[in-house]
Image (tube, rainbow, N blue to C red):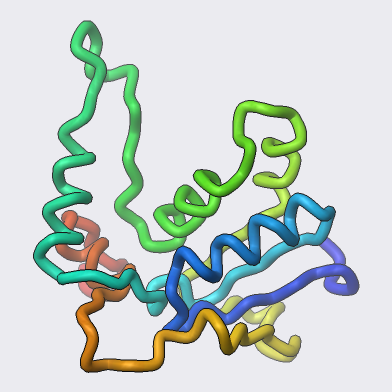
Length: 150
C-alpha cells in the first residue's frame, strides 16, 4: 500500500459511528483508509447498557451448528472494522472492494507515525460528562486480553 493516496484517521476520542460513516464513504469513493488508535474510539451511551447489548449479540449462533457462526470480534481493531462493514453495501462487489481498502490498527504503526492524521472535528466526542465507553474498555469487558497484560 503506497502512502500517497491514503487517508489516515486518528480515532482517539472519536465517536465510532460518525468516524465510520466518513471512512465508509471515502472507501466507496476509492480511497485507501487507515484508522489508527482504534482502542481509544468512543461508543456513546450508558456503559452498562452498551456492554449488555454486545454480550447479548455474542449469544447469537446458528441453532443447527454453532461452529458455523456468526462470529463476533473481541479485538478493538477488528471490532471497529466490523462496525464500518455495517455501513457499506456489504453483499455487493462494490461494498466488498471498499471493505478491502479499510485497514484498522490499535495504536499507531511505525509507517504511519510521520503522516498527517485526519481529525474530524464533527466526530470528536466533546463532553466527558456524558455517558460513554471506549472500544478498548468494551473489548476488555467482553473478554479480550491485550498482549501487554498477558
